[in-house]
Image (cartoon, rainbow, N blue to C red):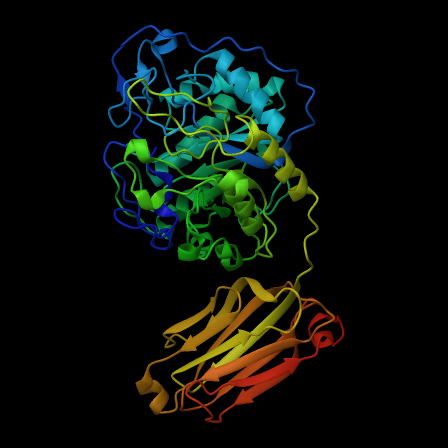
Length: 532
């Protein structure tokens, strides 16, 4: 598996931002080929007594990324994945933490049984298992996962990785293969969610595609439209499917015909605008945020800038709060991860006080006990499921200007939470406009060349949006800004009915400051009443 974080956040050194979908993979990390010769015959797992399965029902609105790629000599005849970055198991492994189950094999039924019990304890209803193509080792483990998951009420979805030779055509073949091989199993995850490309509410598989900006392990870069034909073919399958792509660029939904997006991991909120990418998702697309408890990958050679401390559970709590605080209701929340030991994102219990026999003491969880994140996850899921989502109000906004630039902002109106625009869908934009966009949910920006503005050329854009975090007890305060030439006009439409109704026209052509600001207050009843 490539280093997940590389395509998701603004990271220093050899890491890069997912906004451009660039993925740079450190050599030797997260390869499916991390297999070492037999060193010693170690027990598959220590003796554990399983708890009962009397835990409350798990939630299928919460999933955890799951890694079935570990191996040891007792079960597999060799060490697999625990050796990355030249580590020598069983005591010396490629992780900053050491598992409670020792350096286990993912093919050991006892290990999988423990995992399903812990998942059930945490309230997680779905695992998204790492999958490296038809016939891969990770594919061979799937029947075992399905068999044991069914006994615990857990469902299994698939995380389609950038294996060698992955293409748009092979992705279509993969979906057909997964349905044929495993689709009849009761533990195969299906969702009733709908999207613009899969609008019928019916049971269908949900598949996650990692490193969507590249074809496969070879790293050839592609844009969203590369996948479009295959996405259309997948949606036309008898069983249909929901394809969730790993990017935070909302344009990939419309350009690639994906059903939704997920981020996998967001490290540093101050560099990545947190989960605000949710607001840029088009209507009828699925927001699937991913939350981490921390990120610690020093022993596998990641840059120090990728380290995210757990802060006694504070990081996990903050990530959940940010993911649920965008004003956009998630279709599902994903946890990164259940057992990604290399990157230290797991909630699977570790051993406290373990060492590698050569002077390194593995980190403990800083949250009460090895099982602490299972309890924290259960609490967080309960609060998530009890969340009441705020009402949204549909609007249409038309902006024209003869200036070289103009903006329209939502200002603080005195309410406890500042309102924002979400789910933008562009209806029209003049071809000569150099920018016609909604930025971070509260600012529209329309620009043209200075040369065109100097000859009085007019550019226009029209957007449909949803207004959220808006209290009807407060009016909406807007601010127009523009350059020192020309004028700007804004027309607001109420769109609570079947078609938009014009309710307010704003015009601004004065020169007052370097930003030429003009503020206006819009009565709330004009925006939310069905008969403005």
